[in-house]
Image (cartoon, one colour):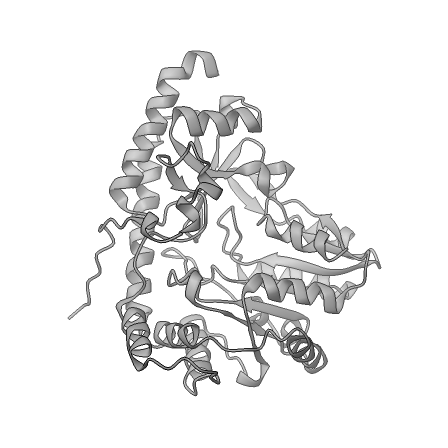
Length: 397
């Protein structure tokens, strides 16, 4: 019998200090807005994860612990069975979170002032990490053609040819535009980076959330040579909605880089274990597959709802995604500057989403909408947007 999950149940995220609905994000005057900015979902974690956390809490002793024997095998099996990626468990290191791994990679394998390539519009924390490590951000913007973003491989080759460019931060799948890069695209990127000695550091935190007919390809699975020239940052945080109670993994196939990473983990003492994170992740990888399949289907139904509701709204264009629960919406037809667009969405439509400009200059006129939410609430929010545009159409266009 197929297990059933109720993603239509509404929970009050304000019962805990959830960032998505906190005044830090919404502002003191925005507590009634549709909270669709922060990238987590409004669904309870898989039942197996909840049971594992309850059982661990019931033990009542929370002293220092090692990694559970079953955690790494569960991760390795998940990557193999779910994504066809055979990973040597000796190549996997623990990390507090994906951003920590990205920052450590920048610090370890580039020098002050070196360039790190990004492909905007892209996750805004990439820019912060590069700046805070004293590195230089080199932008190779994606190209929007016929409603779909593609990599500018010619531009990438030019950027990578600079001898002071040492690294590329890859977003696979891509946040915010929703591209799940094909194996061919990744192979072409890998060839360019290897030719110029640019190491690929791949943020693959959204890899499990892909839509029907699309396949997530881990960058390190493309070829043996690409694996050796890569550092992959993984976490079940997005997949199972456990960002507040899990950690991350760094896959480093190259022996010398792995030793350097392990030594830095030790130096910074970020190699300790959290008992709740361990049991949550192990349960998710062992038993969370059916829940993930169901939540992916629910998110895809939410995508269909957005597509249907805005089909007759020429001021808004959906950039069709291959995966993730984040949608990239094109509001450029409203002809509003970024600040005015944000105000319109907030004050007229009642939306609190992520401003497109936060992802780079190419994001001006866009917005990132989180659809990992209850279907009925999304429908109501879309009604608010459509009504706001309708009421203001004459003055906005």
